[in-house]
Image (tube, rainbow, N blue to C red; front, side):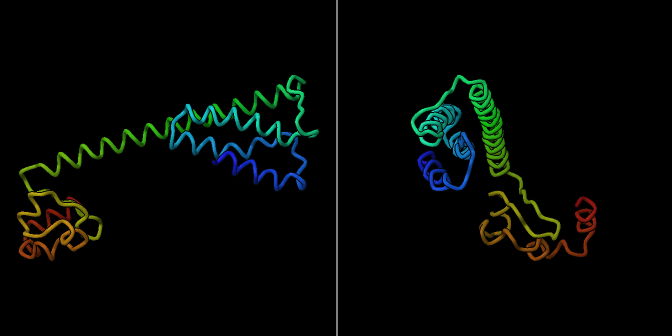
Length: 169
């Protein structure tokens, strides 16, 4: 669908541009295909987009001389840049997936601790709390998160523990 949209947009701008091989409209679609589907759909989209772009846009329509020196150069540059984009997007996609899995493991570990755990931001508002913390405070996570820690632990305010917390933050 993205390829069809790109080609239709490019076709609409065809009278206003002198670009001989308008395959650059496919780059965005290749990046989206990598992000949501992986490298295989992106490679397929790059090839189909290139052939469709040549077939539909190059003057005279329905003919192209791929094997002229400039045609070979454009082809190599296009597929080389698509390959670089696919590798970079796939690497970023894998890194984000790995990071999300790692964060999920940390959250699961902290949530199942028997000890109370909570985290605060720079303004001392609660940003996270585990199940033991919920039970200890007698509040649900939704009620506790976002509130100042001093409102949840009023006895700590003014005590030596508060000074230690300030030093730790």
